[in-house]
Image (cartoon, rainbow, N blue to C red; front, side, top):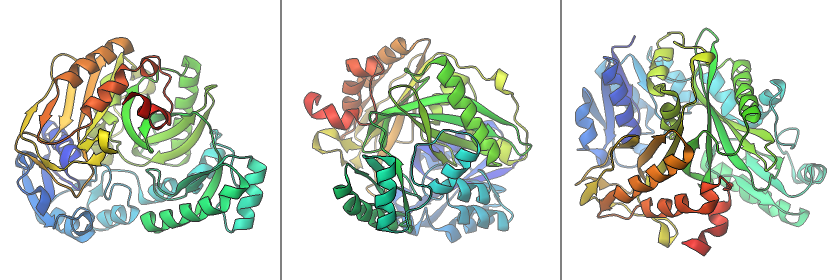
Length: 449
């Protein structure tokens, strides 16, 4: 087991990893930018190092600075968290070249699954359902027109690299296709340095369901059931829950088995998430694999009792999984609301600033993962998420009521947050009945908020 782990991240996930290390008897090393200097959570790490100015490109994305901090601190391994360098195979490889373990999959697996077109082909070989689409990347406009006609409109144009909805466009007709294709390529090239795209059949009113997996170096792979992430806005998740309120036991078994099959075929190890869309008839189709820990991983921890960060560290250190599939329960229901420093009434405008007062909800079955506190200044340079509010109860109905109580208790003054907006969503009949699809919020929010 490691004696010292450096955390190449910031904020909530950095604090989450520090806590896991402390419980495992492992020293933690934090890194921070000038914008995060003085953050209270840094005091909980055994060591901390400044790695550059506020901008991510000059600090949290600066590979040489992070490696230097790891070498100076004597870290055995680096945990990348999520975002920043978490899915950067070059960083992964450099860590290993420097004799520092990277807590995640191999660079080869990361490359294979990070390219959506390659991942799609892998899914086909593993007999995992994929959305009908082009045979490969679109090389020219004439090929796009031909493939779209064969697939049938509407079609979805998707970038092969990256995520978060960038490089993604819907074309309703041949007239729309070429313009949408150019927009998707331009956006993908700017965001990921790779303008390549492919086509898929557009699935109307889909749900977003993902399966958490763990795999060790010995080839053992297990799933930790599914999370439903259908409550979204512009491809950004707002609320996640487990189990999914709509899929049947048979579909649950099939989608989880498909995820395990794919991961085994990819020769993958450590934590990963296999993402699917599910149509109104409960047919599921593979989307992509996230080769890292997810923001919403605590939802799975709540219903299984398994600490995913500790499992990641154990696997990276060469330990076999401590449990088999039959040992992993799916108990009760958990819901997570992402609390962002945004003004929902003004098109979700980011609201950096100083938190003047803060009251955190508590009680049985309530968890708040956050690094912020009264007096903390939310910087304008990074993602606007400031915390994750989770609840756990024996049933989904009870979890909804618990979440509404917890959201009503969460008081943050000095900045705007999305807590009130999320309380509105959770109270909707459509949410209570599990009838929300990935476009529901965008389609209807003007009517109720």
